Image (cartoon, rainbow, N blue to C red; front, side, top):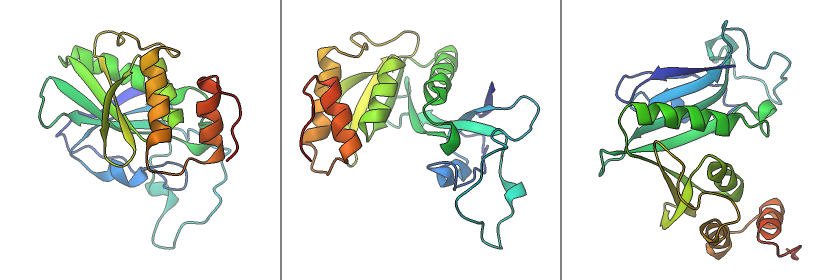
Length: 204
């Protein structure tokens, strides 16, 4: 897979991702944010062996999708801080999750944003799995929350955040924050948090 910039913020570039394979697929048809992808270098299907669980409606043709993409990210400048860029959405093909493609795409995109002159990069996450993956990319919990059950993470564009390593107190504080939110954690999320806090199993 190769990294490719689809378009900078404001370029109007769009992606048509198969909604059966990608979370947030509809967000990538919006032209304002910048977009980057991991894709096949020759334009061939990224996951040719994948079989969707549902058929497309008659009004949608599979050929309309950008099927050479295996992971995608969107980003745009922070509305109140032009030195900061926000990662808006990160999505990986359902058949390829758990292979490290999301963090790889985030790392390459942050490098590019540093080259473009941004000082800092931020992202809001709404689940502990994304939270842990972003920590591996050098982000750290800011202590701020936004949206519904979202934690704010940040890192300098040119280097990892201090205390960005998993196991640090900031990392643990963010994991605890997910449990404090007014939301129901599913059993996998609860086990994940408890394991990383060293608290063992907990009844659901």
